[in-house]
Image (cartoon, rainbow, N blue to C red; front, side, top):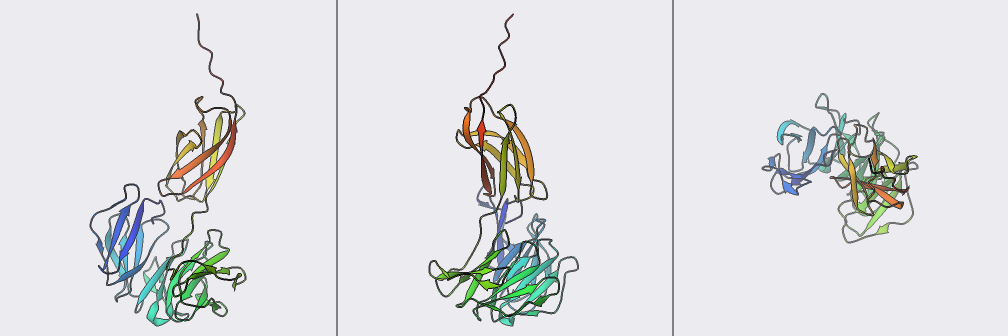
Length: 310
């Protein structure tokens, strides 16, 4: 997804292309974007301007202008590029090389690539911690996860054994846990990021899990002013530039909208109409991307202006 949650990019492995979906309408935007053979992984820069596509069937990583839907560049990274992840600051793109047991790192500013970083066999997924300090790589051929120090570009410690064929991975929004799916089994292992150890026993799921994702860890706090009817809503960790709808969920009553700032935060105040009765309610904040959260409030009685008589 683009950071503002308005568009989804889908790689079409059999067609050598990428489709772009408008989230609000649920329709495909324009024609598929032709990239390289067998595209698999795709990631979008934090500023939403570029999509990097790994073409597993050969050729370089394609760089797509996320707004116009056109290919604007390509970066040779080595054979069999598979999965892609971008650092939170948008400066580096990590690409796993499935047949090369390694990871290539693209410098976004220069478009250059350093020497590949050796990891385990058949790396099929990569995820970067929210603070941008570590890249976690799932080695499906080795039953392990390698950890790369982003600053030095070197592997930290020994691979973390998770067993099976780890094929998908995601890190919790708070950066404390990595969830790793066993593509040949029916379980998910959980790694403690701080200690680099597996936590507890694998979690049993369905057969051959192939993807992991988390709901956004957004924050919303609503407070009521001295008049009992003015609600001030603050939020954090939303996608930048998103337009949020603020409402009283129990009625329901839309109070208004607010645009998220570049740092993912917002603050806005709304007068609650008298149609909403006094008492306990929940203020709901919803984005078109699906991000949503709520906060409880207790409203006072509505005091109407006295009618003028003369």
